[in-house]
Image (cartoon, rainbow, N blue to C red; front, side, top):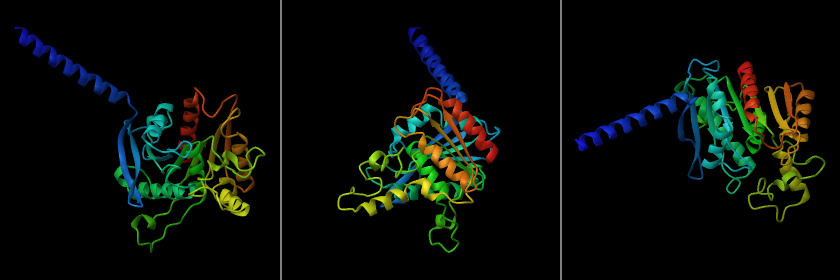
Length: 300
């Protein structure tokens, strides 16, 4: 009798666990596929996670959003999980977007120029596999926060056109996107709220692989300018949305204000949301993610 009861209890526990798992999955706005290899560099795979919406009939159905997953130019599993916690992924998935969380590499191994190249490879990969994910390759958005926002801006501005004669299949595709929306990005390393060389370019490894030892001042300025979105502004760019806290102690709000003005002066569409009293992140960021998702829905 006791053996039967123990068996019955085990069955009940297993069924309860299955029910709880099913309930958790039904509540999640996405189905996550980890560590999709989207490219290779120096024999090392470049990874992204793909978040497919559990509501395929949502308003953003068929739309893709590439999220450059990076903080302080560090991109690893912990950073991916941090992005999930703040809502930058589940909010758009909840509205029917498929989110491609591209990890472009870390400052310990790559410069900003190399990370930018990885982001472009990620864009090409998503376009090449668009039919598999049920999205339109011509209706892609690009987003990111902090360092991810900086790299997303560069990718949205430094577009490479399709090359039908390229040897690599992915290189036959262009890197252009339909809209770019970012949070608290670095935009001008030569004017950091009046100071030259903002963040000291993370000990200069952001622009020089082994640091700035032995480089001239002219070389430093040229390298800093090359990775500053402000100096990449020109006419004919996609629409931009920038969100920034006016009390940001890491990246000053001046960075977004200055870029938004430059984009508009060049004839582009640029919207700016300044969050009053907010630092580099804030407790109610989900509200701004909702606004940005609605903005992407309208632009894509």
